[in-house]
Amino acid sequence: MDTGNTAYVLGCAALVMLMTPGLAFFYGGMVRASSVLNMMMMSLVSLGVIGLVWVLVGFSLVFGDSHAGLVGGFEFAGLREVDLVVDGVPVQAFAMFQLMFAVITGALLSGAIADRARFWPWTLFVAGWTLVVYVPLAHWIFAFDGAVSEKGGWLANTLHALDFAGGTAVEIDSGASALALALVLGKRRGWPHEPMRPHNLPFVLLGAGLLWFGWFGFNAGSALAAGAVASNASVTTMTSAAAAVVAWLALEHRLDGRPTSLGGASAAVAGLVGITPACGYVDTFGALLIGVAAGVVCQLAIRLKYRLGYDDSLDVVAIHGVGGMVGLLLTGFVATDAVNPAGRDGLLYGGGFGLLGAQVVAILVAAGWAFAGSAGLAWLVRRTIGFRVPEHVETGGIDEAEHAESAYEYSPLRTRGSGPERNWT
Image (cartoon, rainbow, N blue to C red; front, top):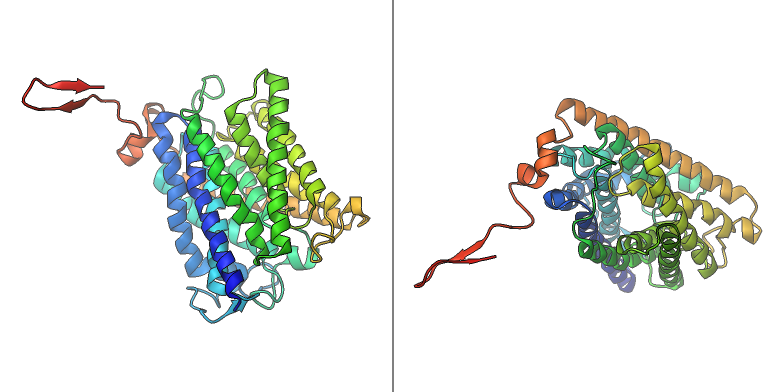
């Protein structure tokens, strides 16, 4: 066991765990005041329910010995293999790192159905979604032959697609699943005619900052060792996010006349999403290209949803789905094995069309699998126990109906003393 790399992976796991509370603030600030608790609770419960699924069977089905390259076995069920070491890191440390990927991916989906989803049906959905949608896709791309087990998934080992930290299993997966959820649950009442503006932009900026901070663990931690590849992933992560912020705000100012705080926060996340699959395979030039492309394309994709007529409340499809596609596709152009010998040269570095073709197949497979599985599961939940809140709850406030709480107490504060009663507002 390498104690230095073990400490590194455990620290990165903690950083990625922080991304889920960061997402709760990011999403919570973007919804209306009457549903902020419901929005944040959907992230919190994902930590709980996905954590249990992962420890019991999820990790084993992703990283256990593969059955035809499609799904792992049950040899790691319960995470009781305390003596197994993977690349110098105990398998339990690696399992906790990978758990945080599963949690943040599931929590991301909630943004597509903000302001209209019931809490317990969401909890049931995200537990089932982890097993039905996330686990197979993660096995296909994250389980390498000879790493945790002898045989891994087909996208990584047969197709040889490049995805360093989750462009398929996290980003495209969440984006395509979010589109399916939004279509099954339907539009918010009043959308797009009624203004549904963020109720707390400082929350959004705080959440974006926490996500950016945690993303260094997400991307650089995927190297599983504190070395040159991790350092490069850290540099490219920062470069892409920075380029996306500048590109997004410049385009927003050109189109709308003002750069906005919501736009800046969204831009940072778009740049981080775009670089996720590429961070360990591209240099700073590639990161700049990906960041600018993500900042421009993701913003245009948000504008497109109004023409297409689907109500993805918090733009999961445009930022995570489209951003993940941008990153994976451009990896086929700008990847270079000079950065990481485990990678391949992209088209611009003389590698031909082989890698680019593999990236396109990975995009189509991830999007198709996630959309079909999520749509079927969401339909089943809707038809059996109901997924959407009643109309009077949606208009009157989900927080009080679902949680018997309110994020903000507006009633007067009262105090009694020897003098007359005072009302403090």
